[in-house]
Each structure stands twice: as C-alpha cells, then as structure tokens.
Image 1 (cartoon, rainbow, N blue to C red):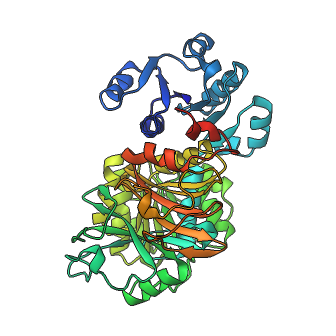
Image 2 (image 1 turned 90 degrees about the vertical axis):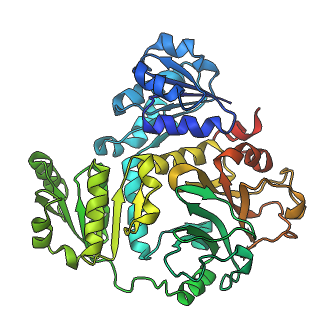
Image 3 (image 1 turned 45 degrees about the vertical axis):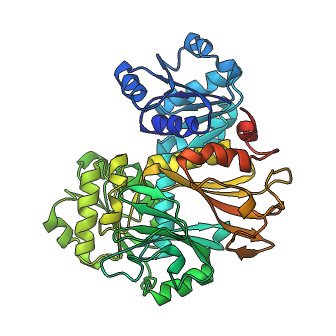
Length: 459
C-alpha cells in the first residue's frame, strides 16, 4: 500500500505514525525542512521537502501509483487543489481536510466537481463528539458501538477503591463485562487475569448496555438526572461555533464567550439562538456574572490547551456537572486521567480515527483511538474468508496487545472466553496496542468491498 501525506502538521504526523505501524509505504511532504527533520528523529518515514501543489513534485513522488493521498495542510484551498491534481494524475483515492464552515455547506459540489473522494473536518467532527457526550449525560466517559447496543466506559480507580490492589481474575461485580484495557501513567495496557489493578488506573470496561447499567448502579456511577438545559462555551473557534449551533437546535440555552471583538460580532450575526458574549473567558468575575455555577455543562474550545483545561477545572470546582476541554498537545492527553474534568477531546485523534475507518474498508465499522493514541478500538464485521473463523479464541495465539472485547451475533452480545468461536458475519470489537496493529491486520483483513479495502490485503 502506497500513501502520500501532504502537510506534516499534527494530523499529518499522527497519520504517518499510525500507517507505518501497518507496514504502509508512506511519503510525507511539507515545505518546512525543520519540521521534517524533527519528524525523522521520531519515526522512520520518507520525507520530501516541497509544495504539494507542485505537479512536478507530485509526479516525482509517484502519485500516479499511490493508493491514497491525504491533504492535511493548514489551507482548505490548498488541500482542495492538491486532491484535484492527485486525482487527475492517477491517484486512486484522496482525502482532504477542510475546516472552513463556508465550504462545509458546499461539500457535495466540491467533491463532485473537483474529484475529492472524502472530506474530513476535525472541528465539526469534534463538535459532534462533544454534543454526543453531553446528550448521553454520563458522569464518566462513554463510547457506543454496535449502534448503541454495546458501551465502553472508562472508570477511574481512586483512593480506597474496591478494585485497587486486586488482580483482574479476582474481581467481583463484573458479570458479563470485560476489562479490555487499562490506562496507567499515560500508557495503555491490555490486561490479563494476573494483571493487578492499581490506584490512579483507568479501566476501560466493555459490555452490553444493561450490564454496564448494573455495574454503574453497584458502584454508584449514576447518570446525571438533570437534562442538559444550560451550556457555557469559552472560545469562539470553529469548534465553539459548530457546537453552539448544534446545541441551540436542540433547544439548549448556550452562552458563547469570545475574547476577540470582531469574531464575537461575527458569531453573534451567525448564531441567532446563541447568546454571544464579548469578554475574557478566563475572567472569574465574568464567569460568575454569567452564572457559571448554574450551567449544566462547560466546554473550553479556545486555541490554548492550558486555558481550556484550567477553565474546565474551574467549572468543575464551581459545581458544573459536565466539564470538558479541547486539547491539541498529545502529552496532555496522558495527564487527563488524573484531572477532575470529565473529558478532554483531541481533534487529531478524532480525525485520525475517521480516516483509518475509511481507508480500512467496508468491513470496518468504526475506529476510536485510545487516550494518548497508543492503542485503538476497532469495530468490524468478520468476513467469510477470515483465517480465524470457526476456531476457539484460545487457539488463535493472539499477541498480548490484542483482545477481543465483544462478539455480537444475531443481535446477542457475547463476552468471549477462550472457548468462544467467531463465525462469519459476526460483529466484533477489538482492542489493540499500536505495536500489534500489523498482527491485527493479518487476522482481520477484509477481502472485499469498502473504500480501499485492499489496504489490509497488500504486503
């Protein structure tokens, strides 16, 4: 599989890092030689200095033989032109990052007329994820799979927790549930029966909704009874704009605070049903005047991670039930477990998950990167030609970094054991550490259908 990534920013780097783990031939192009030097210090990838709009450069990197091009520069217009050129030069499939809200309203035209196969918008995707989180109204992080039938929650192991100091095999209260992963000191662990749970761990627990609810009740993890009615958003970024617009359509009262006067005026004109306030979102007096403590949710969406995290912590201390922050720096993601805020969302992970889902083919339903990006959760449909069907899991010799969390067959959710057998057309959810992604590819490669399904069928 041959892939060209144009733009070596955070998204381009993360995609290159993940694709290399799958033995994909990646070429990373950027105009900044210093950026490329830093990247070469961390990952083994072919880097090329130059402008992705340069047709000569595209020909030199062999774009006509590329299976995929991803344009991730900071310019929507540049990404659009690069994808159009790549398509004309023979690239099989292209993906463009486009963030401008004005362009989002013209996506169908852009895709059809310019030959763009898929468009990703990190800001819009992040806003949708935050909205989904808020409307689910859980006090812990939760992710739904299998159309909402299966849920994954993360559960923090605090001081004097029942789980602390116990081995996984000795735990009670996990009937028909599975601890599929553990986040410890910023690293992801795939646990086994002898793994000991430690204080400050975060357990990723997977199971059918009704069993998750039973677990929740037993350990006092009740859902927030009060509906989301009042929300405060600090930061009039595109994420803040998309989120405000979407929540207002749900008849939720939204206060959006933006420090830049001209941007605040622009947002006020665009968002008819949102109260846009010109002011400093870090000003405690302003937040108190705007009744922060009466809010049902607070979201920090400024361009500064530290500000978003600080204000989310302040909102939590003020008694806000749901407090979230947008972050961009990867090292901050590894600290979130220890903070009091409810969730931190990284647009890079959201978009990388989106792209991985599309390039892996029709059998892959969804991909979610675990905290820190060190692992992923993949939902897929088992093909008839998969090499592991009709065999007990114990005989598959899966590496320690891969665990099958659930099997869904004929609408029934199964928490697998060693003697469980996977059949064709089963829907499974797999947890995998990054270093074991090549093995995951070998076991679960789709044979037909889907966008670039041959990605997992080539050496």
